[in-house]
Image (cartoon, rainbow, N blue to C red):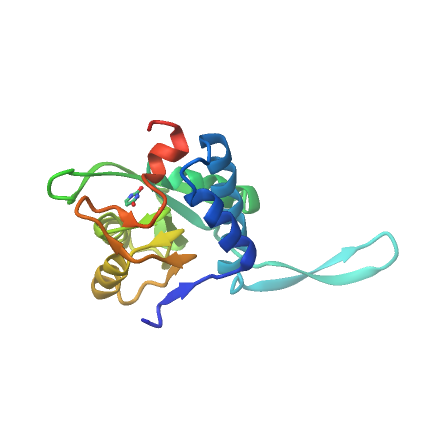
Length: 211
Ligand code: URA
């Protein structure tokens, strides 16, 4: 496994992912589970955030207490449309993060991503960026999204997904060996339509009930 790839295998995450995979899981439950997994992932991937100390008063005594030392906030760049499900979870834990959106659709024949929307904060070059999409299938969308974000010159970039295919990981790590990639599971393979097997189906459809 490439050292830039980190599989976060917390039992709670694995359990919730299994529930998400089940064909009978409703859109309402799928949405809740994706948000919960995103919260747990955020906890893991923010471990290296720097701390500083500030003087506070508890009801009983003064104290030098730790707070996160971010001069500039994080930017979460969500790959539309399924990225929205992860974004909601992250924003619950980091409400001060700013948000970028990248709209890419997969051409169903070529599976090549086509960009139709891109909007990020103007000062992204002074910020750390987290690019999010639940599924890393062929890797085409993630590769293109990170390429586009790189062109805005941010301080750092991490890519976060829930489920990855080996093909997507190969593709992503080959093009972006400098970008840490976080996932909660690596599945078996892609089918001829670019779906992850066994996977969980189309994450966007399951999230928005457009099946
Ligand atoms: N996108 C999805 O939503 N699901 C897959 O299996 C592959 C790409």
